Image (tube, rainbow, N blue to C red):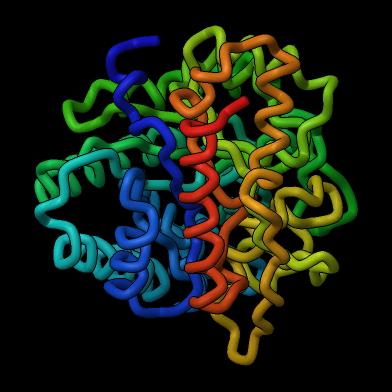
Length: 388
């Protein structure tokens, strides 16, 4: 494990996946720093509208690649419009809130943004086709995202000089991209699978550009869908992978073991964020139909962060019932059992694994979100204090 990888986060850390309920950025940032002090993150607040959800925030970061919100979702356009200005304004407010709450903070800090392949699966070209259908467009999106993230990391480093920054690319659609399960805008057919080598190449270039920044201590990918392409992510050179450990099958043990042996750390989704009988998932771009990570062609596991993060703040949207949280020891049992099957030393567990919710928290009430984050923090300590 590299020196930077070894200091990405302290043993027993817990962090969030991204989204939180509410519309007050300062309140949300304070909540994160209070409840997840070892590895806080910059939260998303999708209740503020589509510009505050995962695709809208990524759109605000893209350099020289304007988008606009259409009835069917976000579309690439020739020049910036009102929707993009609103997305950028929301992001600026988030950064102002971060400065207000945490200017003197020193430690690990995570930012998350929609990754290039999920973004290409969500954005439409000017004529209405998915950007994923155009190889040149996918390259341009990756380049624009890289440039924008470089600017954001440098800006955060100026605002919070003590922050050791981790960059998380959210890729809930990546398994569907590789499997050829992304639907066309009409919904009547699917796009061809993208070659794994191309996926790896684009991710490697993007991650490498971010890793070179002085303030960056780790770069990785989060995917809450089943069948996370772990071998491809390892080939792309990630420092960490975030995934829903409760959804892993034993057939994936070897792939997990290989990435851990390669020095990759895990953000393990262990704490449930949805009730026992969750409502049907909603598209991550808001009320736009089944075209994204939560559509019928995508794995249901992508619905958590992508779905909760994309409710677009519609008035009257339902708040999910609070998840039923078990004893902390039972919460961490899936990752302890996995560790045991892989034959790794128990004392490594708390160093390699950070605990997270299984998905985003935007669908919960504020008190329930706080409870989930506290449970994550307790679970992280168990991995250090009693890992066997």
